[in-house]
Image: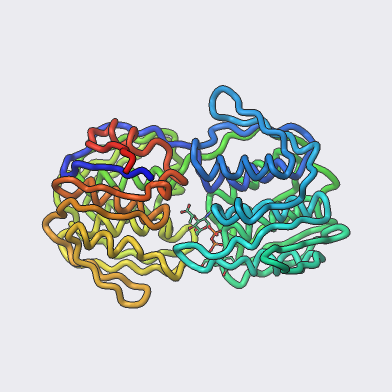
Length: 418
Ligand code: EPZ
């Protein structure tokens, strides 16, 4: 296993190149299952989860070609295994996104139940409810979801709660259904809009993506596409929060700044200076920041995927702050590890109360899930002395070349095998 070794307490200065969004790339890769035409996807991030998804698509029978710039050309012309096996699905819950397209195009699919993960049970009942509303029959046997439908029929589906991949799975399914599907209480994340734009370029008839009501008029078939994945707003936010926490200056280019406005307002309230011009954003932080209260919520609220990173910043803010996690039931596993660095945090239910301390001290910590590990890296960049972050395979799922990108900002961070 590998770990990151960080000599912290250094201000960071420079520019980071933001990669394509993992959470946009994954559903867009699944859109290749909806057509027998070749499709081209550009700006894919070089991440473990993308590799896992390409392996899964290859298992199903998609022909995968890598192009010279980490783009892919996929062909779903000869799919011969409408099945997503447990050994792949258990490592990446987003595998469930093959379900909608396979049932829509072939009338059947078998996908392993994803199982829970570190941050929560993460059921898929809303995905199932929507497919059943569209006429599919769903059986669960031996840990697999077996779904079949003569042809999916458009339906009105009201989600019981906002679900990002639930919205995406049913939008994918509805593109080839007979008639109109209306998704109510839909997720409004920018990645949902990016997927909708990709599907529209294939000939899908979709309106309302980015709002809480999405309408999809089914069409008989979809053509290929050539789509460039949007920028990763969580990766961008992670670097912004790191530089705000250590002090320094960061330049990011190619952003849609509106899609990170909740984070920008929090960092501004903390005392960081954030300026944006067009797609460029400049962040400066010179002094000890003010504490910032956070309550995670579906987009456009504060993103749960940024919660651990902001908590790390709050550990050395000048005062007390609270962080409420309302999306997942167990997304505070970075707390115990941050306390090993000297943070003062108490958990009361789904609320963490952070007492800012003057500084952190390096220690050995262990990553437990993707975004928790990002919070620990920020903790290590803040702490004086040496911090090692173990089990960084969690990080590699969602951050491309993290030690290289932080290194470009002047951080002393290296990857070692332990
Ligand atoms: C997506 O996960 C993201 N993953 C997550 O990012 C992100 O944290 C999450 O949305 C929330 O923004 C991808 O897009 C690949 P949900 P998803 O369905 O879709 C409950 C990262 O770090 N729920 O929006 O799986 C669920 O348990 C990852 O990049 C049901 O109860 O999340 C959770 O409490 C982590 N039944 C809440 O809804 C369902 O059928 C929101 O989950 C579906 C979800």
